[in-house]
Length: 321
Image (cartoon, rainbow, N blue to C red; front, side):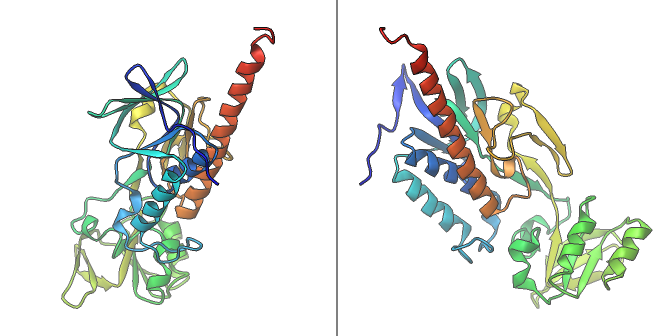
C-alpha cells in the first residue's frame, strides 16, 4: 500500500520542496521517480523540448524497443506523479544557492525553493548552416548509429564530417553498411587512406544543400554535383542548457564535445553539495538508457545526502533540549 507525504510546503509565498528537478526528460524523470519513492517532496520543472523530439521511435531501450519518445516520457510522468511528484511547465531563468538550499527562478512564473537541485536540462544540437539539414534532422539526417543504424543497414549511407569527431563517426557507420560515402572538404591524407581501406567513398567538395527528391532519396548537393543516399549521418555541436547556473562558477570539464559541467561519475554531484547534474547536460553521448541510469543514481544520492543532513541536524541538538 502506498503512502505519501504532503507534496509541498509554503514558506511565505514561495513553494518549498526537498528537491527541484530541472528538466522532464528521461534523466530528470528517473531521478524524480527515485526521490518520490523515497517520500521526498519533489517538483519537476520542464520546458517541453527534449533532444529526441525529432525522432519517431527509440531503439536500444530495453523493454521499450520502438516506442515513440514522447510516449516514454508520458509514462514516466504518470509513474512519478503516482508517488507525489509534481510538475511545472516553464523555462528556468536562474538557479541560485541560498543558506538553506537553492532557489530556481522561472521566466514569468515565480520561484521555487528546495534543499537540493538536480539539473537534467539536456542540450541542443547546433547543426551546420546547410539548407535542408535541420528540416530532415531526426528522420533522414541522423547522428547516432546505435539509435538508427539498424533501420538503415545495408543501405547507401552518407556521413557529413564537420568536426574532428567526424572520421570516427564514419568508421562506426561502416559497421552498418558497406556502401558509405563521406562528405568532407578537408581531411588529412592519413585519414583519407584509413577510410578508403574499407572501401568508403570520399567526396571532397563542400556540401551546399540537402533535400529529398521525388523518388524519396535524400540528395546531397555539393559545389560540383549531387549524390543520392538513403540517410545522412552527421554531428552537430552540442550546446548544453546550463546558462542559468553559469554565474555560480561550478567546476567544468573540457571535453572533445566542448565545455560541460564536471560531475562525479557515480552520483552526478557537481562541485556544489546542493546541485547534481545528469543526462545530456553533462554527457552529450548519453542515450536514453544511460540517462535513465544516471538519473536513478542521482536520485538515490540526493536522498542519501538529505538523510545525512537530517541526522546531522538531529544529532547536533542536545538530548535534554
